[in-house]
Image (cartoon, rainbow, N blue to C red; front, side, top):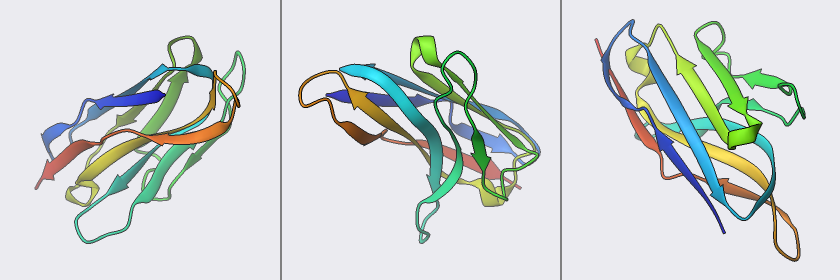
Length: 126
């Protein structure tokens, strides 16, 4: 079993910043692609940013158009963590932010599986 725990959400004024973190634990052989998604009330869950596994260096990073230039994604493979620095926040960024990881599970049958965290609320006031 693998668990993802997010932290760092909160209430911030427009223009402010937050740093979201996601820590994975459990039967992990390798963390493949990791990323953040968000879901606002009445909307579907959407990709914010994701990063592939790059070994000793960062893998490829994809950002949603809404995140480019304002959000920065990074990962620490040694600690099975992924961080999302969110700057210049706008009220439209308000949503529950979810961490997602593609994990090679360290127990038979050693499958590559997707896991989600419980989410962390980000609220941006105008």
